[in-house]
Image (tube, rainbow, N blue to C red):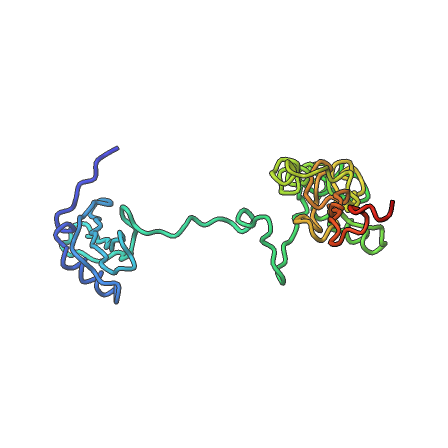
Length: 255
């Protein structure tokens, strides 16, 4: 790869480049000239410091050019570019990748993709879901809704496995200090409401308002101190000595 040679006329156009930077900068201000680099034949870029406190590390880049067999240098472009150590915004992340658990708030709509692997058609079992054409699947959903055949989509096996993994590792799972100090497991608690279907073999919902997991999914082997079999401690029966002894006969009057 050939090394670009810095054009002399373009390199000497420092004042012209700075005037262009000042006209473009406005309140952002232009500082000292930092360097000039060749971009192409008879094309170079001058870099000036941006001294505005809101743009630390940024630089004004002014590209100048000269036509063949011409001595006049003209301005090609003026931009503000980040330099070494410049303060930059975080990299942009698509919304679909940025949304996380619990991010849905009142008034927010979160569409579900027709190709979501966590779901499958409610009337087929899901074996044909991956092969369905999007347009055909949309028509099928409309027919299912019109005929009232139930839910258009249900959890797939993958969806159930993902949910089970989250719930197992949550505060309602078995591996936490609450469970380790509990007197018994949820499966033996009267407040444990078992889920239906395959998930019910492992999970249920706590219905005890005093438990920190009230209204949340818990595993059968989870536990807390509000188990229904915990009995209220009974006060010990204590017999006090009589204030006036009416039983002992020290004088033998009742012999």
